[in-house]
Length: 233
Image (cartoon, rainbow, N blue to C red; front, top):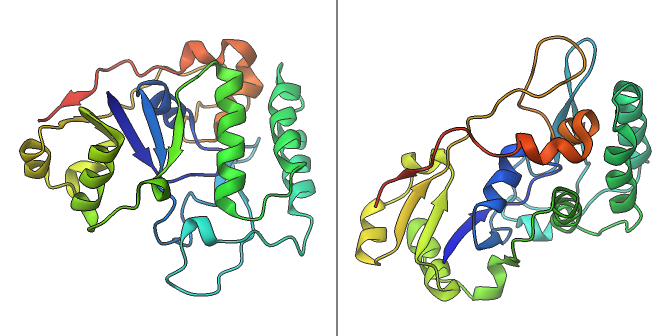
């Protein structure tokens, strides 16, 4: 069984969903320390002038708080702001209503934590794209150890025979531990063709909602990497 493990992100880019679609089990690794200025609570959309951030305000009580503990700050109506910004910049996209509908559906629930909101949106987008991969949370596995040892513990408890890592894993994973544990290690390839997009030169490093707004149900045709994953162990 091939397992993938990533922290939850706010309306992530298409590569995140390609990743989910390539594994047999996807695990949200959200019992890790929350990091500011990262993808946990923000992502980018395209405008006629440039890329802009859509950021969800969160409450930061301590440096050691976990992603799954990080509460959303509802003291301002940031949901309305995100919807207005998206509408202003994508109203000319053929499938704007599909993308905005996903945001509206998620915002109805006023999720308590950023993890809950991220996971809700990711599940909604997966449903739209026809991705049916089962999903679980790392906190379910009562993990021990740190870094690669912790990951190996998760993979063993999940019954993984193969682990799919993002390409940045090369810089921090202890590949020998995978060999010792008889778990195959693969690095994900992110190599995508451009799709029809508003506002000039193509920009791929944006939220998946850009792809959905521009391509609608055809978005799944632009979801798979053109290059194969790299097998390491």
